[in-house]
Length: 347
Ligand code: TXA
Ligand code: MG
Image (tube, rainbow, N blue to C red; front, side, top):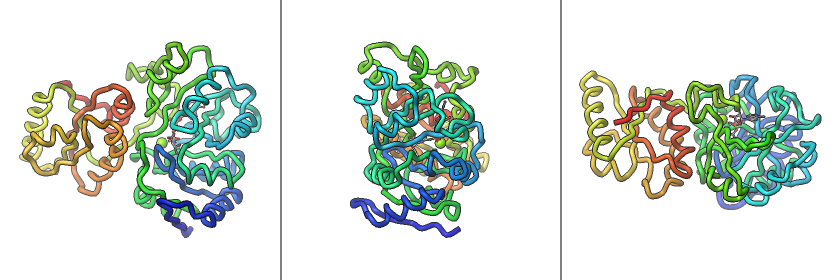
């Protein structure tokens, strides 16, 4: 299949949005930017169209999708009830990077929810996404637009690498702002539970609701089975083997240098992923800088792009500095640990 690529960084091209929406209506796949990562979208009410997403991504069929909407009217068509806490959260965080789990109604196809009785829904903030949704007049089911297991795409070039020839349209809207996927919050039971941490943090949610929310057990203890099917799969993995270092500046510095030299002597190609602050201390080549510790949004925005950079550099080993697990740092570390297959060194 020939993939059409539309580039619209600053201004929306109405005509290209209309052509893209037509593809959605015809049951084809369109990749579009959101403020978190790029999504590969299909008409969320058309099972045949949604099936194409699973094929293109090589995604396990037990991993449910998020429906993207642009109006509360649309939400009301997809769920039987919007609980009060849902209304409060929507008012505070939509449009934005918070995905909410509701009890689904019958018009949501089983393929979208992988047979579960809940449906994940979010209203994105990105202008291209909103315009595409408006023009398509249907909820758009869209997972991250990467081949399953690879780092999520934050630039159109990442999408082109993974999905060129497998989708009808890719809309290039430049680099995404947040860079890690939305926070997923289950509000279908009594106590709200965060199934995936993202840029909307636990503290922010608790402040708005005035009650405590919990992390899914699997986010605290590796051995627990995640409630979100997607969380159990290997994810975000660069080709090289990755290890994370957590500790004081001095001990991280020492351990990274030591292992860097050791692997080099073993004839391995080593890459180092660190903050600007640690990079200043390290006098070695092969450093990729994540961003500044003082700007966690810069780090989240860069993370997946930097992981993909190591694939271009064809490194065997990636030694990576851990980030403080505070605010969006919780989401960043969640992705980093998955990318590293949980190889974390406390130094
Ligand atoms: O920021 C985002 O959320 C991006 C953009 C494109 O919107 N989308 C995204 O989709 O990250 P995806 O499919 O890569 O991740 C969706 C996550 C998966 O972990 C999936 O298992 C979980 O949400 N999920 C979806 N529906 C669910 C449900 N009914 N119950 C539990 N988990 C669900
Ligand atoms: Mg994904």
